[in-house]
Amino acid sequence: METPSRHLFVAGATGATGRTLMRQALARGVPVIAHVRPKSAGSDLAKEWPRKAVVELSDGETLIEMMSGYTTVLQLIGTMRKRFDAGDTYETSDIGTTRQLVEAAKRAGVDHFVLLSSMGAGRPVGAYLKAKAEAERLVRDSGIPWTIVRPPAFEGEYHEPPSLLRVFSRLPLLGKLRPIHLEQLAAVLLRVSEKRGPLNAVLEGDSLWAEVKATGVKPPVTP
Image (cartoon, rainbow, N blue to C red; front, side, top):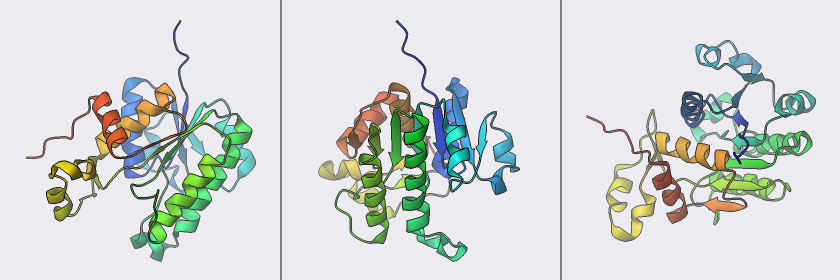
């Protein structure tokens, strides 16, 4: 018996990780819809996607309607301190959007919620990781089966990890800290969404790198 296909609702599709995941999903024919805010709906990037959910997350009823029929929500939205001048905060971009998506997912009948978090959120220090930890709590308490992915530093596109991290991650006991390429991270998020698992589990360190290995995706070779 064939496993029923999963249908993915991607929040944060216009970010670096989301763009990479959308490209991989569409190339493989995975049923996927990209959440796009109305002000971004006319962008060249959004025009490339065949299915879009154009809605503000604050519009709960419309969000539920657009999410209905999708099995999995991927929450990839987050911010960085450098965006605070534009009005972003950890409360609105990391915690608030997760709360809105969780509430809609519960009412839309979603049966898997995948959250992109960050390494260190299990023992948070500082505002950034504390916001990630609160977003994780909202997901764990939602009643929806979940998977949380806590990657280390990213590399790819405009993400460039500190050079010292590269040095330290070459040490045998610190290998799990090595940067993860966006292509690998997107492949892991897609893999756990398609297979719906592991459920109620956090992928971090060795467990995350085991999933990376299972995808078979290697970081691109740079000249």
